[in-house]
Amino acid sequence: MAGYELLQLIVIGVIAGAFGQGLRTIVGLKKASDEAAAEGTTLRSEGLDVSRLIFSLFIGAIAGGIGILTVTGFQASATVNISAEMFFGVVGIGYAGTDFIEGFVRTQIPKWGGQSFVPTMSPRSLHSTTEFFTTISSTDRIKQSCEKLLKIPENASDCSGFAKAVAQEFAITLTGQANDIVGQLTSANGWTELGSDAQAGQRAAAAAARGEFVIGARMETGNGHVVVVVAGSPLAHGKYPFAYWGKLNDPANAGFNKTVNWAWDQASRDSVTYASRGVV
Image 1 (cartoon, one colour):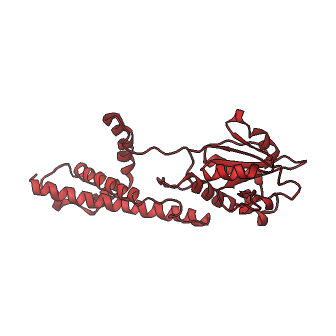
Image 2: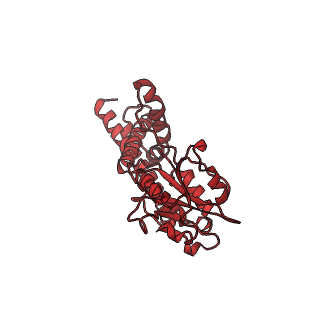
Image 3: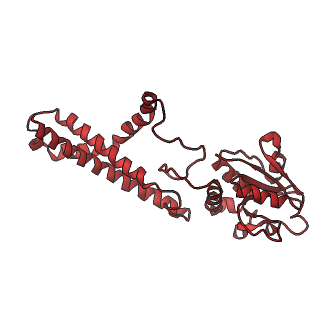
């Protein structure tokens, strides 16, 4: 096979592979967009990384270039003998074959080069079918998780269920109901205890502003109550921080970024237990 024929063949394969991966990207974006819309958000707010999509197209082009050489077997005049079946076969390689190549890059290149080629992901779970790398601060990440998860009816009507769902996004484990959670907010469990006095809310707000994951909870007869504290100012009455919370059997009155004086009555709101811990 002459050099120019080989070049033509590779170009056809690259185009077909990129086309196949482009189809896959469109399908993936549509699915991710639908999921984001169902949760009341957008792909942009979820941290869509365009460079990630361009990299996927590049990998698809490589897969197509390799695939067409395999399909044609380097035969002379292969460029004029490419059938529709062969072309769309290479498109399929670009669509599906990227999993192998990208997996190879992720697992083998670090071993050869002595350092990781692809940034590692944090242990927080991502709520989209596509992995996106983000650089937003932990304060914003916590608030975004609260906004997203509190829109789920089951969380909006269950304060402890909501708090556990947000904690899970940051690889933090909370168990049981609100009264149980109060007992877990100790230094022995990895938490920084912020107290339960009238000024504890100020310390909780400061911890949230530093990007820490902050819980406020109060043990009560029957059902206690728990909130996720977020960064925000000014504090209500100078001491009540902003938070998100579900409300038992009353999702319409769940707390979306409101100060915690709305989460407890006047007799209870100055004896809430607050604790914080760092997130990755």
